[in-house]
Image (tube, rainbow, N blue to C red; front, side, top):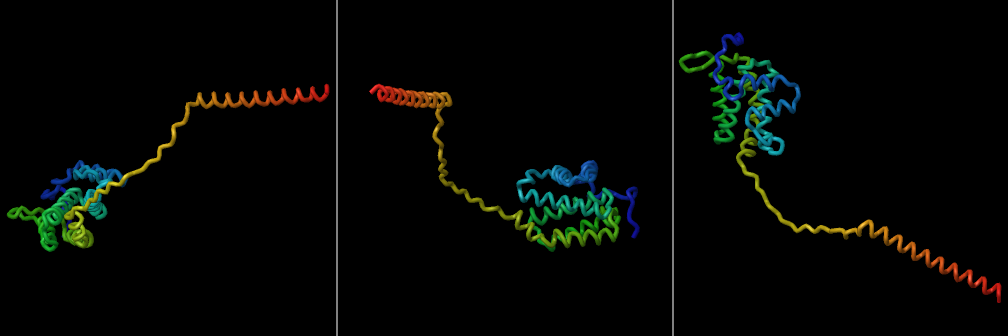
Length: 212
């Protein structure tokens, strides 16, 4: 089957969750951190640096886009696949759809973007080789680990607050520097006077002995 061209493509779900300009911005940079930041911003995901759930969702969205880039999807196809993946993710994780039902949803959404049928609203975005690649990708990524996704997003993490007394030893306050200097001078002066006094006594004794 011949790959549809941009001129013959109808949009379907393309550019419903990510605009052309947002997609252009993500693909324009080669910096990984910037790509992830832009993906999070596009999806409205906050705190992905310190929130594990947010980080997982950002990774899910980002790698969906990278799959399309690696397989040289047109931007309309990339955006449509991105929206399909988001819809399947939300149906499974947020709405509790079973794995089999979610996979059926994925197939029906892909099929509706693989043939042109005005009566059903289907649009031709993906060729059969593309469909096979997408199906293989989601089977080996999202649907392989879907139970883990459901568990992480469906279970609240238990939080235990523990209060413990904290003893902190406070060092004694140091005396002012001026007092310390004055004290040293005082001691030095006293020691000096004592030495001088001893010297005077010795001198007196020597005089006494010489005159005795």
